[in-house]
Amino acid sequence: MARRRLADERMSRLAVWARWCAFFSLAATVLAILIVRSGMLEIVPALATFAGALAFAVVGIVLAFGAFVAIWKDGIDGIGHALSAIAIGAALIAYPAYLGVRAYRLPAINDITTDPIDPPRFDIIARLRPRGTVEYAGLYSADLQRGAYPDVQPLSVSATPQIAYEEAIKVIAKRKWRVVLERPPQAGRPNGQIEAVARTAIMGFRDDVAIRVRPTADGSVIDIRSASRYGRHDLGANAARIRSLLADIDDAVDLRSDDKRERKPPAAKPAPAAKPQPAKR
Image (cartoon, rainbow, N blue to C red; front, side):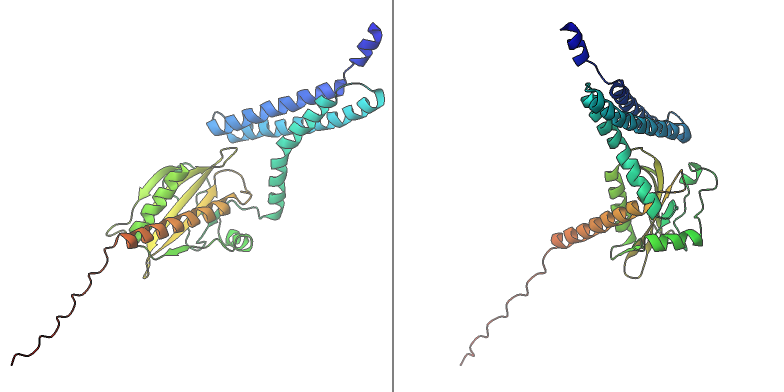
């Protein structure tokens, strides 16, 4: 009876190893994200750690499928371990796989602007970017951008440059970006300029943003440039950031204009005309 109980309690070694690989890949992924977000190491070692974590996730999935064969063939335990390894591995690989699909479909550019002919310049941020990435890539990149993101265009608003600049600053503050330059429009310098550093949601990669506000005959026009600090491919992140930022600024300017109209005192009603008096006889 004791021998039979020991046989019933046998566990698939492949299932055990699969779960250990899954847990290790999960811990390594979290560590890589913390390293990138904190800036403790350079970007290359951090990404190498992340790639190693994903490799262990794949190994865990392969071992789990091997454990299924052993469990079905030998009638041993371990299906729970194998299923957990597959669940953790699939969860870790799903998002990088999605990014891989986007990298295949989108052009390999990492510097997007609403004005490729005269893009907003990086001034203070130029000191933070790697050498050779300060200037806009040029007409070839502009052609690729036009084909992939034709809707990335300047925003024209009827508000004054000062109002457009103030609302842009408010939107950036809500997003909690790190502002490194604030240059409002003023007499003798009609263009407003903002430079800020944004971070991606998961890995926390630093992307640089420049916003320019210029006066026009009907109000002002807002141009934005968003560029990744590292890598050749932004996976569409900069174009999505520009679209979202322009939409928020447009809504903020419209809301401020509506509030101004509501607060405007109503025009005084004209006094009623005096009734004609009957002529005295």
